[in-house]
Image (cartoon, rainbow, N blue to C red):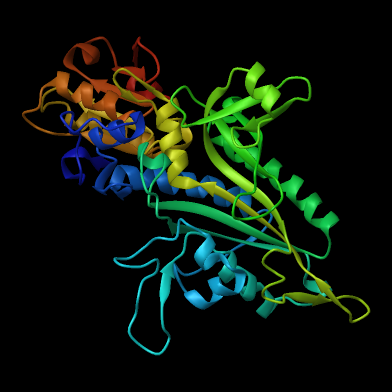
Length: 409
């Protein structure tokens, strides 16, 4: 049981209003702290949410790949090999240049906005036979991008947490089959995050990553920063960059937020690094690659944009920082609170107990709504006289009295 009085970071209902719901609510409720534009510290409550999103993603990605962890920095020479050092305009800049300088024989480094330049030679070093292919590896890592105008809280920052998976194949056909297979696991993720009904696949340009089209997973959201267009005739969503002119003129756009993006990058990165494999006849063949990203910190922001009301955040059960928020009126009945907490923890539930003294019940209830834990238990003298405690779901207005031994999550 986590006592709220001992939790680092508290609610601050007077905190600054930001340009997005997620930034405002996450800071007022004590989940994040802004350090500079587009850069945040994740406080204990926020880190718990991030960790739960990561674990949901890991559960699905482990079924189709192996997890690794690549470095946050890389030497500039590998970016010169692919030609992206000068063309990729979101590389984070240090003062006076587009890369970080380092004294010593190894030269200069940059903060990685993506990891194709590291993962391709890494894969080449270990897997170069047809017997090794196909295979896939993924990581959960912090990325850095030089956003000129960071905005929308966690939706567009200079530093963010991302899962990126890379797959390697003997043929274009094999890549295409795996590409479609990955979509199924992404849909499992969105289902577990309670975003499935509002998420759509969107045809998008490949941008700097590939000349091919890519597939975005966009979450329909009234406060979304993107506009997508639905072609009902062909049952295809397009993002704003490639939507055909006639569709743009005849169709009303839908607001949405990008949660993930997947690419068939073919030989764009394997060719510059001369990554070939030996086939059954000992002949060199090109390796085809796919890249599959999903924004972890971005998902946290999107979920807050989707799940909130006038009182605060309404977390889905799967990623709430705690399962149950217990509030005790007055300093009495602590033995009953302890009994309730022990019972629920034995059942595998996590508890946040607001044990603060000299704080009114009204303020505690406001804080509980702002923080947004799915279930609230209120222990009062009146409820105990009625035979139990008050149980209220965060997304419902009414509460019910339940006997202590019949409390269910």
